[in-house]
Length: 190
Length: 88
Image (cartoon, rainbow over all chains, first blue to last red; front, top):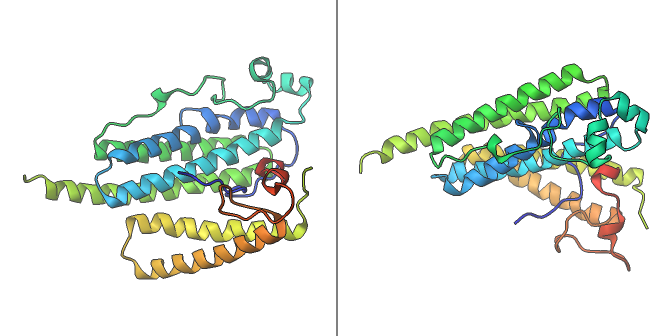
């Protein structure tokens, strides 16, 4: 089970409302390379992992991704909560407003809803870990593009933290992949 | 009624965030390097420090963990009264 800790993994401050930036950042909430997909992918793949290391790593990174989902949600919430209707219209967020007001929803930067088709569990640990490594790189690239788009230094600071975490996860998944490949080689002869 | 966070509580929260980050990083590292004795020692040191920080936070600022992992030190249900992370 999970125990909620009433804090963010990394503090989130914003300089002020900025619905345009929120509309782009929301892709890391519910987009194809976002934190919802990441956490659900890893937490779901862990059941069929063959080694102690891979089960532990998927469990623990999957859990950290839930903390990142909360950070991204907090960014979007803080950037939109005081926005006026005129500001929402100017930020091209009127479509989101029509469907959700200022509530968060699992969508990408152009409003497409999250889908389980973004993720896979193949049951083959090599295939799954390679997907996980690709996912980390895609998320890292997304944070890169968001940093390029950001005009709020406080938001950029949080995006940098999240980008760095993708690099660390990629490294750990790579180590797990090497280990599993060794394990599979030894297991081949039955 | 919502409880405001004092500066002392915000500072303490920041230290918890820092120490938990140390523990989390070591946790992921140990998942793929389970026999690294130095990392194991560092992890236990971070866990001990984190426990002390959390106890101090619980006492001073309200419960940080739910489901019985933090005590409620008041006559009302502080868990719901202290601000949520997105409200800070």
